Image (cartoon, rainbow, N blue to C red; front, side, top):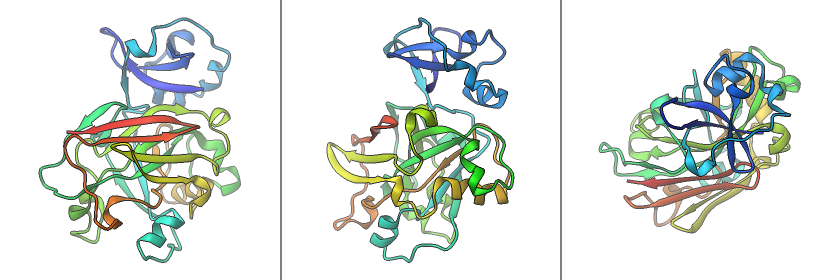
Length: 278
């Protein structure tokens, strides 16, 4: 299944199910009881949508939001691709490095993100993110994927001059629009194995990053196990798994984003996330 958050008319943001480029309202199909994708995950009723078939507006007629616009937590993993650690000249970490973003950073597919006035060195980072579907606290790695509702694309836009101004990375990670996400939440049955999701990033039509989750230092099950040991993960929480080699800050010459730039993150499993820099 592919789940989206959409708006149409005056109903506000709703959970939608994509069927042949049409949007079936998920909660209407279930007979009511909620509105959002996060509520859908918390309800445990996602499986009831498997056989749903119905008519709805064309995808082109609705306004997309981030798949989960209101997560309780938005966690990001740093230095989690072997290729990225190597290009940065760093040894692979012994334990996951993570930081947080906030809901103000989320933007949907097709959004324009203005560059922050406080930075002159904003970079791109293509990432596969997973979304928690069932509460996870001290989960064993062997059981971790049972707690994953699905996967989506995320661009961890990073103001490098702010990021490395302090020992903590978050100052460069939290500006408005710093986490374009989408276009849909793809459930595991459609996304395939967690260690075989492919991802690529094109900047103004030029390929800059390309990899697969097979290159992750800490696998998705390992991340669920480690993070849930530190904090209880709730339905709708988003975890971005890190970026592969090719970011602008390690290129020679360096590549910083400018107004008018077009970024496209694509995956044969997860779709295409487009962002314009304003």
